[in-house]
Image: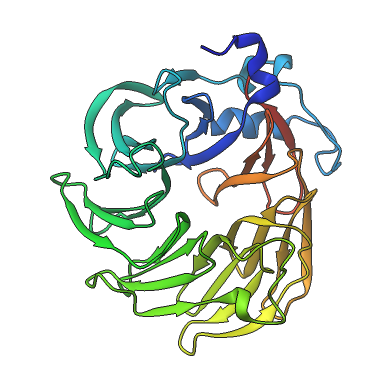
Length: 341
């Protein structure tokens, strides 16, 4: 067991998810714990703070109970880190080592374990088959899991059965995303490739190798792909290679961005492209490559991000220290929120 007094010095926010009603923020840590925060309380603290646009502003959670976690739930008892989180119909979905577990919720309260799905493993990968990332198709009630055994799995949330195994990567999966409208998912791997999949097929429909492009590769950082995101027309990705924008229909790169360090997160926010990683800011670009916004961050490395527009506009960034950076208009940092006191 980790000494509680040491947790503020060694905590990592590996994963995050927001409840479907937008009221609660769940944080998964390297200690196997899930911290639950009230989104409304966070925004109340922000709205009562003077000069919220000051980028160096820090609101100490000790000032008021509004910024303390509503609950700290031990999901694994130090046996595994909380690698990934998702949320579906008042069930918090937790990805650990070779297991995906659903916990029934009542408001913010984690009530009980509802179900558990074990991902198949061989003796060779039994100890390293982490559920590194999750993407949920809510309409189909299908969960996609990117794992340490190089595979992506689709799992039915109606009966818990594994529907399909998407194989082809030669190293572990860092990130997955999808577009339920067209039945497509994408995966980013340590092997340096991005694979596109039709959810009805086991084999990938296309493969991108950004590290093979002269304008994208950064040999000193490696070929691994740390993050991938898609919308209807575009794909963004990065890791060791530079952050880049790809046209989905042609599978051609159209823009390469100036983010200077290794990349762990990405996403489409409104009309902008977001990227973060081992750098002092999270950046947002437009499609032409113009830098629009830089958000200062507290962590040396950013590993997790979630955002929503309603009922409370919120962007939460977490990484390799004890602080979450909370933003309410996606343009500046409002609160530096401590996870452990």
